[in-house]
Length: 190
Image 1 (cartoon, rainbow, N blue to C red):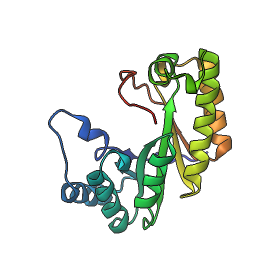
Image 2 (cartoon, one colour; image 1 turned 120 degrees about the horizontal axis):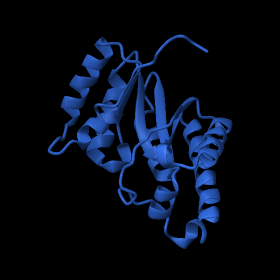
Image 3 (tube, one colour; image 1 turned 90 degrees about the vertical axis):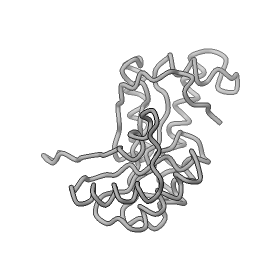
Image 4 (cartoon, rainbow, N blue to C red; image 1 turned 90 degrees about the horizontal axis):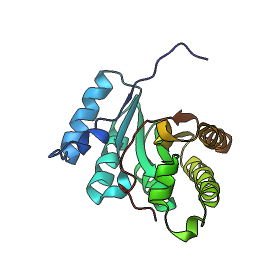
């Protein structure tokens, strides 16, 4: 264990979720330069699969910024992870932040389709496999993979631990245990 505290800054991604906030590529790059001067350890630059503009901003930051890891967010969906891998290609230090809902609320709300299973147990097994597959795919692009278990605060503790262990075994180098409590219908899954 290290005594170092790492600073993970998500201003360029999560900060844009505030009402009326939209940063262009130039603004994101300017903020990333300042975050680098502040010596943050990781800059979560955006969610490339969300829009071509966000993908371009992450690409520009990845190409220019030296020092901190440049991180891109994805769902546990192959196309999202591939989008991250593409824009982070020229990063000196790249990280993909991928994950999936861990609470019964998120699983029931976001994964209603029978292709994920008919029962909650079947859905949980499928979600667990999706988490593992996402981490493995992200590792094809970078050695730094952060896994998030969305809505961890409301997740069944045993299932949450099983998910985190599976993500680590699949190659996650960092785990994120967010207490998001975001609406379960906030994102559609492919």
